[in-house]
Length: 355
Image (cartoon, rainbow, N blue to C red; front, side, top):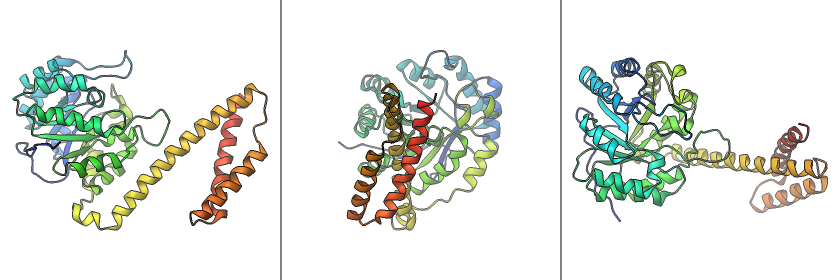
């Protein structure tokens, strides 16, 4: 199936990369919303985002003020001239947001993973000409993401785009959500006219990762960035660690190198990004391997076994060294890698057994 798309065509927004959408994770107070919006507009940001309804992983956290905060977004638009954007998860959200004049809607990762919810949202947007961005589902399922986009498009939403915010994993890792760049790249291959916006805040989960992720997204040809920016990030009521000051965002954007897509596909940068993706996969695999090692430690603890099993260790070194030679690598190089992995595995097992 194909997507029938029109340009996002946002009024007053120049059609150039990157399209920047920025603002706090949550609309906490009217003062916080206006302070952040004022600082962002002074830095040239033209689209203000804020969470009005905040679906949280667990109950008890700040879940947004709901419709009470929509007048704050109207004030942002009236006093700064910025366009406004917010997340919607139900038809009621859509109705309230459109009534308040919200200019752009996005659909979150939890919602896009649910075809029933997506169909309800699509039905509520039937005949409405508003730009809609659909985040990838929480799980790495490209077909589910495409299905969510197709449902929107079938309802007549032609100003349509995607947001890449990474994918959840049970293992601790560098990123809050694993980028798995090959998935949005495949989405772009199938639908070349579909704008893809990167969400470095949710991928990184930490503000120091925002800048490199923004550059990586631009190097991969993404259309834009949606970044969480707060006038006082450390005091934010939600996702404080991944929000940046408007001044910091301006610094990041000012130093972005924007390459055209044709140049990138033929350049060294393209190969380096493949290496980055492979390195990310290696780190994820190492994390999973260490998790299994910790499970082995608990087994050894319960059965009063020694941590180091020399026969097993020698078997690993011999087998992987031979495997490396067959793959064109120096066996000694492979041996050094597995010695380092084994050393870390033993360290983690010792921590568990000696508790």
